[in-house]
Amino acid sequence: MAPRGEQPQPLRGRRRHEVAQSLASRFRQGDTSIHQLAAELGRRPSTIRRLLEEAGVEVDDGPIVGTDESSLAAELARRYLRGATITDLGRQTGIDRRVIRRHLIDAGVSLPDRGARPNALAETLVERYQRGASIRSLADFAGCSYSTVRALLLDEGVTLRSRSGESGPPSRF
Image (cartoon, rainbow, N blue to C red; front, top):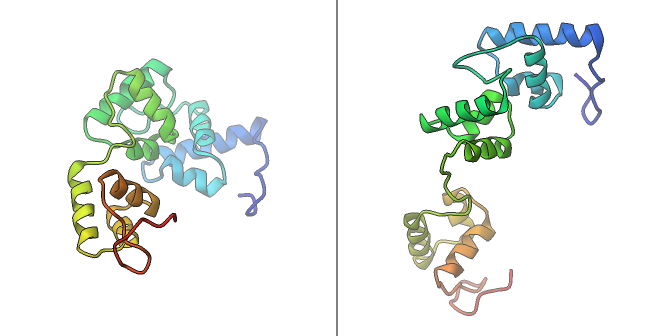
């Protein structure tokens, strides 16, 4: 592995073949993910995926390696519709979540709007804020950023408290 902050040396020729075979052997054992292998080697998951493809790794129900684009999209859609999340698919395959999302859309899967927030969550956040909870604590509760919660409260028509805690015009920050 390359020292922190340095680029790893390119893999070429015999060394590339040896690394690909070693990765394939570890990967086939089933206890190491593409992301783990990438972290160990200081490489991107896409590079590890390519090396596994070069080593001839093809797995039916495991990570998707060595397949054409339409088959990849169909397999990702199948797994997604069976309950896997986009994050799960990314961990399993080493494919970036944005690429997975594009493949799912190409396969005809209807995905929720990335900016959509459930009404129940909005109602809960508004209620808690009106009972005195801070925006920061609401962000921690909802698992999102301060600015997302603040925008949601404003979208819901809530008058924000000043920094001193009194009700008044919303602060600019």
